[in-house]
Length: 141
Image (cartoon, rainbow, N blue to C red; front, side, top):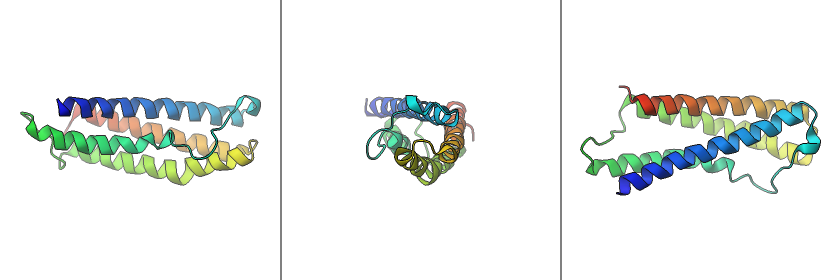
């Protein structure tokens, strides 16, 4: 039962972060295209984007909860390593490029260079999530 609840939380976290990232990407694209009048930024910190950090936490919880299952998940499996590495890359892009660029855009909504930087980094984050998802589905190694 615990394994199922944690697994569901892991999946919901992944879906939520993809929705948030797509929304952020659409905002960045609108700014690059000069459609800034349609853009609204959240006030303060973007905690929705930090939902990304729930993915590895719930992933480790799944591995821990799986020890009561017939085939427990071991952290030394290759697909787990791929998931951890892609998370670290995605988190770095989010915290180092995307969120600072978003703060710059909150102050100056017409900063096209920041919007382009944010858009490119969001592409990278979403690519990392797709790679991790494929690794989780295939469970190779």
